[in-house]
Length: 119
Image (cartoon, rainbow, N blue to C red; front, top):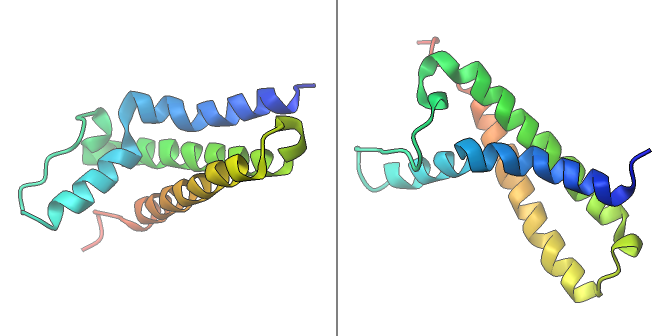
């Protein structure tokens, strides 16, 4: 059986590896903020997810990231006594984790609700 710290690394990797390789979450927010300033929207990093043919892969990667971040946050919150940090440091980690989790869930909702073939 894996220890609780190993599960933290696994769930953290489920979020970080796709983000480092393709940056789907950063691309979404970068293009969202850029579109409010001008009509010429450029991605933060070009990748094969930008094509409309690969939207199912983009949805899978964002879902994988959301699951990884959700379980990372849950296991971090439930294993507070095993991590041995002060309450202030704990809150300084948990609050940004929750903000990041909600922002990833927003991107996940947007990705699954967007369907370019309708209309």
